[in-house]
Length: 351
Image (cartoon, rainbow, N blue to C red):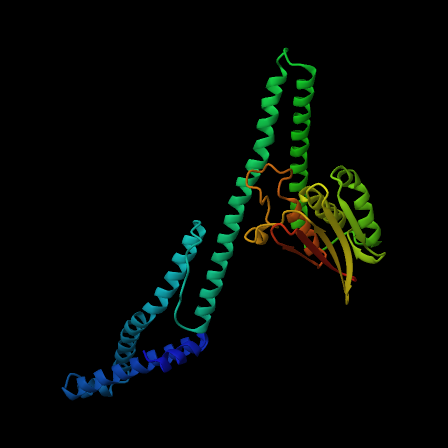
């Protein structure tokens, strides 16, 4: 097939394709039937009585056209049936969990669109399956670790020969791991609730500058404990949104900045107005984030510390990302190793 004919073939829509197919089948059927009758008459296979009879000739023609037309239709429809069977086989493999299947259907433009949509669907389902497995693996790890720790120290606490200091130390660990479990369960519920929302509810007008200052006061003890230098440059501005959800965003970003900034380091909170949007920056002087890790920091349960020794369960940034998107905003991360990290949340001033 030449390049011109392939190009023309790809531009013929499905209705025209079927119409042309029916026309050519009819044309070929009539031509073949007429030719056969001409040959039969030429060699005397059809006598004049049959030709002059008004009943037998139409019946013979009808039967001949039906047989020849059916044969030609069966031959020409094999390609169409093959395409449909290919699609059926592809959907069957997809239904069984084979998300690597891809289709390259040839024919009318509708078939090419069908192939593209099928391949896109298979790719999306494959990505969802990977995320599902990753979520289950990470959740199992995060859930199992504190339970094993609580069980182990509870068994040790049954011993009567423990000193008061040892008993208090083990009880503190049990309390800490229990709080970690409670936090994990709470964060999973919050994330599930947020992901299920398509429309932001419980919106109010509130002072975001005052909210940021209150978040600083809530974490003042942690900041003082690490002797961190804190610069806050925020103004009183009103925005429309869910105050409780946005409060979780600020607390998470500030808590992360405190957690990863070394003692004596510095943290900057700054607010900037950009046309009809408001940008809030959280900058720290911590160790920074690996370049390869930055695209994954908003994934569920992702932690740059593969040993999971750092406090947290990898859900905070994922929750923050979902909340900001629900408000029609964006959250970005800019980080360099040994030069600190900056998270920027941009929100619309009016919603």
